Length: 189
Image (cartoon, rainbow, N blue to C red; front, side):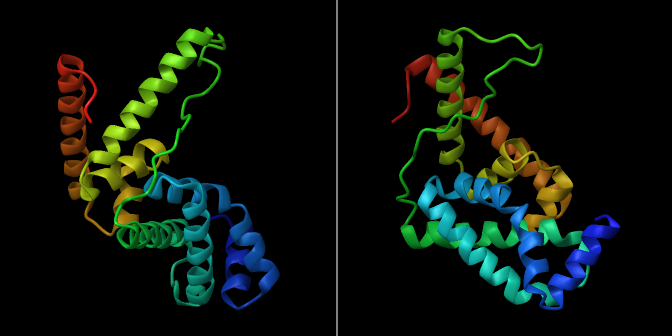
């Protein structure tokens, strides 16, 4: 956390409402995406973020290390999203998600057919990720869909980095098995 951000955090933790707004505003989109990846419902994700914001503002003064603010905030979002899913009985509707960029890394624009195939593959993979047990699903979502490092995932989930690494390995192995089974037998229901 750079010096300007640290000063903003300190003012926010002291109760400065404008500083709180400035501190959280830049993080809303990332928090909403994280909540959505867990709940799979846009309205639920917004509710989760609102609840997480209220909780984090209420407890901001208890955070001792300002450098851990982003991991702390992400953990609050994850916990609220998990609670939402438990209350909803995981009967949250799966919505279409477009996770792929529109332009290739080399600047080429894929054909419409290729774009559709990529979106379908991404959606199929996300449905498979959703079938993983929570202990494997959350690290995958945080690392591969939120772009976090293993260390950040470990901090958010409050697990040793070695546990995160082994859960990611197990998740990739399960996903590989699901993909192979689907290729042999068709889409899983």
